[in-house]
Amino acid sequence: PKPTFWLLAFGAASSSVCGYGVAFWLPSFFARSYGMDLDDRAIFLAALALVGGVAGIWLGGVLGDKFGGKSKAAYPMVPAVCFLIALPFFVLGVNVPTTPIEIAGVAVPGLALTFLCLLVPQGLNLAWLGPVVTAVQHLTPASMRSTASASFLLINNLVGIGIGTWIFGFLSEQFAPTYGDESLRMAIYVGLSFYVVAAVLLFFASRRIAKDWVD
Image (cartoon, rainbow, N blue to C red):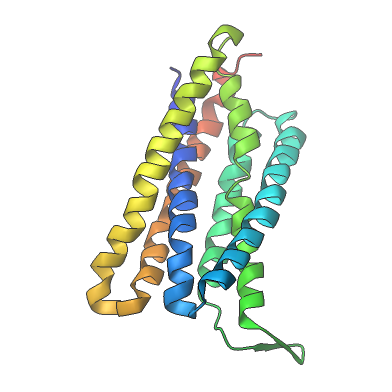
């Protein structure tokens, strides 16, 4: 396989470590740090996944098509930039207090601000799907595209699910003696560094994708 394939595959997989890992542990985080019961968590996270997921996948496809026609480098660069934008919003989202916050003289519920802050990374976290999958399809002749897609998805899921769901729990256990119930928040801080890894790998992919592209 071409070097661009490996960069795209492990770049997307690194983002999936955050995607799968945070999605798996957010219910526990909201229970521990925000005291939310099961029903409230279910509604909150379902709405977050629905709105952010649909918007993010659509946005990634639109941006990939818009800029990809001018430069093939845009296909990996669009999600790389999205991951870097998502990172501070995620950190902000898990730090909003539960008490109302006054904005322009209006008391806004803390959970409403948390939802809006997390909505941004929820969408941007999925913006890679359209551009990266499209790029993977154009790294091989038509006769090999099914194999390329299968290999890409295998790597993405093995790394994303295999490491993502484990690493946040492992980090939380390591931080527990020092931070107690807030250990999961610290684990999320550290685990989000995989977004930076994903952005770096996709940046390198953008530097050589034009050379490996197959029309």
